[in-house]
Amino acid sequence: MMQPVILRGTNVTNQPAAPLVPPKRILLGPGPSDVPPRVLAAMGAPTIGHLDPQYLQIMDETRRMLRAVFQTKNELALAVSGTGSAGMEAAVVNLIEPGDEMIVCVNGVFGTRMRDVAQRAGATVHSIEAEWGAVIDSGAVAQSLKAHPKTKVLGIIHAETSTGVHQPLEEISRLVHEAGALLLVDTVTSLGGMDVRVDEWKIDACYSGTQKCLSCPPGLAPITFSAAAVSAMDKRKTKVASWYLDMTMVRQYWGEQRVYHHTAPINMTYGLYEALRLILEEGLEQRIGRHTLHHRALRAGLESLGVRYIPKQSLTTLNAVMIPQGVDDAQTRKRLLEDFGIEIGSGLGPFKGKAWRIGLMGTSSNKPNVTLLLAAMETLLPEKGKALAAAGEVYRTAD
Ligand SMILES: *Cc1c(COP(=O)(O)O)cnc(C)c1O
Image 1: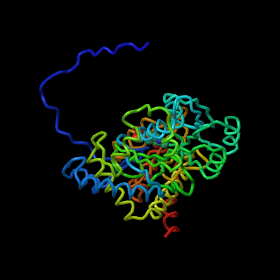
Image 2 (image 1 turned 120 degrees about the vertical axis):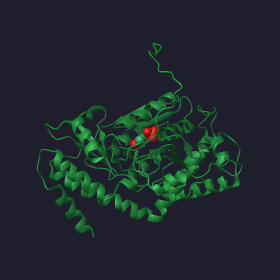
Image 3 (image 1 turned 180 degrees about the vertical axis):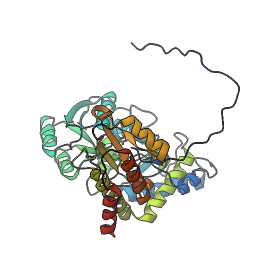
Image 4 (image 1 turned 90 degrees about the vertical axis):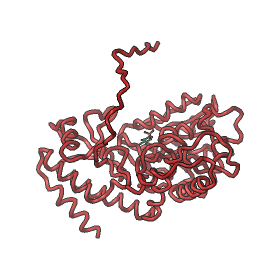
């Protein structure tokens, strides 16, 4: 049983707290990433009503731009109120009814979370497990689909932020559809930084979060559903378990009907709108290329310092590396933060204390950040390599 929490010495006074002065950081962790000034400025624009004709137009344009970034023609594409995990819950609870069978691929923290969400939604869950740091093998997917022919949905993480693994999806998508199931994909750490082809790869439910490669503060979860997924929702016999995330209602607000459901987080939508404008101004392809280039440069630099990457198939948006022998995890991250203003992420689960997670997401993925981090690592790590020279070589040959 849960013990009641007893609050001791709760500090209650009428004094206003100190003024809010957050420090300036360079965010190279697993998210949030740096937010461009234009996005922050957009969020400071006047709040208007959630049914104001001007706001409705902003929603329509946001949906249009989201479709471009998801590379989809899906009618149902919108931004769920809440962070990436709300996107995960929305995708799962809208497709799953109690007793439905779902396969969840688990090779890190976020696959584990998706399994938990699916179980809470009442699914009978079958897991496909792989070692942390490895991809999910399509042979294992074929086997599981064969063993569980009633599977309605298969859920998988495209960019497993806890291990840095880049999961290929095309073959798995083919198997899932051959088995008559729906494919649900988490693209929280890939959308806006890596190729996510919802239509071409036949993804039926795909969600993301604003604070990773979209370079917007946390608070919204872009999501899209295929026609097949919408038809599965239409055939439900039971109500969606979550009132707040029920797409049958949320989509009536985002759609033509404009039926009030909950008050939209207006200024967050402004932020996403501006972040999407920035992505399309840059060009999706160029942006993906930029993430690849800076990942390659960082990687060359880190490897010259004896730092080893965990996954064979690494994301370009997140670099999961082993901490070299004899290097103090907490102390190094503290010096990066205090001396260089750089935040990187620590390891999770089996990699706790053993790995670092270095994000190069969205706006954060740039040459000055790579150069500064490598210069910092050259001073902080014992192995004396030529990290800046190695990265410089990548930049020179890329021009
Ligand atoms: C960050 C992340 C999430 C959760 O997003 P929150 O915004 O923290 O709720 C889900 N999946 C993946 C792969 C992530 O990296």
